[in-house]
Each structure stands twice: as C-alpha cells, then as structure tokens.
Length: 85
Image 1 (cartoon, one colour):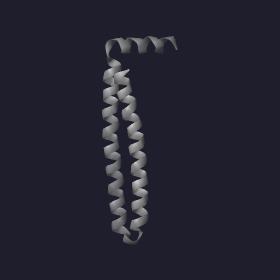
Image 2: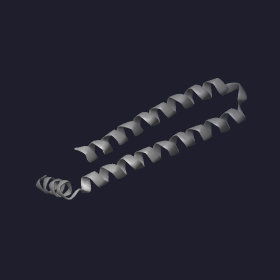
Image 3: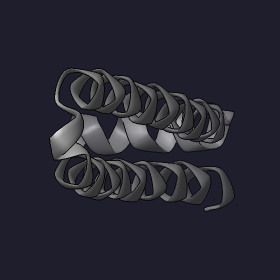
Image 4: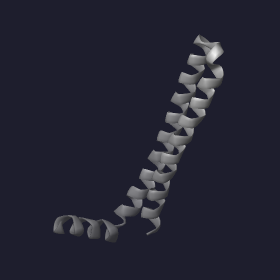
C-alpha cells in the first residue's frame, strides 16, 4: 500500500496523472464511437435479414447504444477529473 501511495505522489508531481487522464478520456471517446458503430452495423444487418423484426431490433439498438454512451461518459468524466484534480 505504501508503494502505491509513493507512485501516486510521484505521478501527481510530474504531471503524468494529467497526461494519463487526457489519454484515458480520448480512448473512452474513441471506444464509444467504435462500439456504437458496431451496434449500428449489426442492427442494419439484422434488419436486412428480417425486415419484419425491424421495430424490435431498432428498440434494442437504441437501448444498447445508450448504455455504451453512458459508460463512455463515465470514462470521459473520470479522465477529465484526473486532468483537473
């Protein structure tokens, strides 16, 4: 536990925490874009295969995309908090 405290103090004093927070926020945003893209791609393929299930697929797609965006928002906020604090 003491080693972790020493490492955190060293990272805070050298600015590595701010760089890590910025990189983490960027990765969270990029990952969310990739995730929502994959959800949309899969939904369009599913609707093309079964057009009669389009409403159910669309509803599930919107729900899944909202969940991905919610998790990405938490990641971006945590990264920005690391930059600011």
